[in-house]
Amino acid sequence: QVRPVESGGGLVQAGGSLRLSCAASRSISSINAMGWYRQAPGKQRELVATISSGGISNYADSVKGRFTISRDSAKNTAYLQMNGLKPEDTAVYYCNIIQNQYGLSVTYWGQGTEVTVSS
Image (cartoon, rainbow, N blue to C red; front, side, top):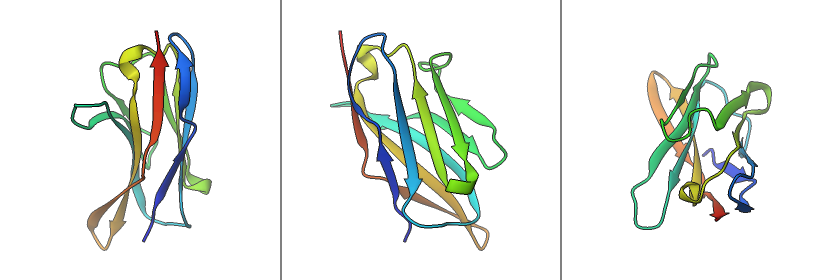
């Protein structure tokens, strides 16, 4: 069982920056993609950004131009650089890893890291 482990959350003022990291709990092969999602209190979990094995990234409209996802394949680690943070970015941020297992996609979720942006 692979467990993504998130880190880097915290409290920051509006306009500030944070960098989240997501590392697989053990060495893992055949990763199709890694992604970041977030869930604010009382809201559903939503996509923030994903990055494929080929390095193609995808962002939610609400974070485009402010957040950047990157990946270190050798370390099975993904990062989310968050700049220009807004109070509405406050949420628990979850990382996922999508692995190809014999032609099937298997998704692993982390426990989340909390980000709080004060106004």
